[in-house]
Amino acid sequence: MSNVRLQIMIAEPSVIVRNGIIAVLKRFPALNVNVFEVADPSRLTVELCKWKPNILIVNPLFPCGLSLQSLKNETGCRNLKCIALQHTLMEPSVLKTYDETISIYDTAEQIREKLETLCCPDNEPAEQNRQELSLREKEIIVCVVKGMTNKQMAEHLCLSTHTVITHRRNIANKLQIHSPAGLTIYAIVNKLVELNEVT
Image 1 (cartoon, rainbow, N blue to C red):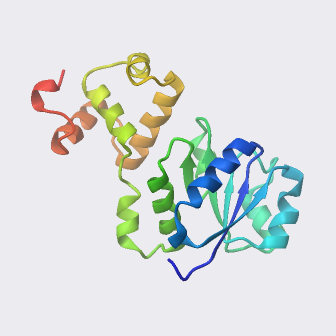
Image 2: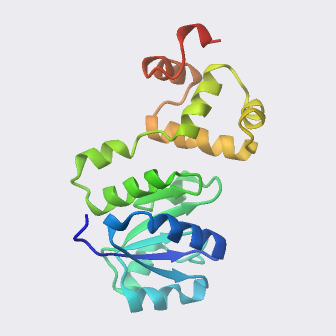
């Protein structure tokens, strides 16, 4: 990765979110990243034409109705990899059009792994790491195994109920496990809980 120069464009209206992503990207000097920012949706097409980035990290609500394919065709960026920057729950059909999804709750390590996987699709270990759970996701699984409701988990972990639901959806997508019973088996096998903790 160190000899590849990544041109990353961040299309997001919030300066706080944009600066947060930039701060995370600067923690990975091995990725050799050059970052461009777009805050105004009306400038997205122009900036893509100007800078021709490898990767576009974009709030899915940002392109104002333009499809990703239209953006690629209009700007000549046909090999552009598009990453959805997920703030809230979104329809899976919307996220399917993206090459990858970054949640604002992802750790810096998860973001690095997703970028590496996207840039080096043949890198098998990176593909495996992409499915690893964050510490918070593991905590959510433990709460599910203990029989807590979403509201109880939110109170226990000092999160909003909405955030808990987002984590649960991410867990289901990563593990392809969609039932509490399945998560219980996963938690026991992976030593997240002891057998006597299961309710």
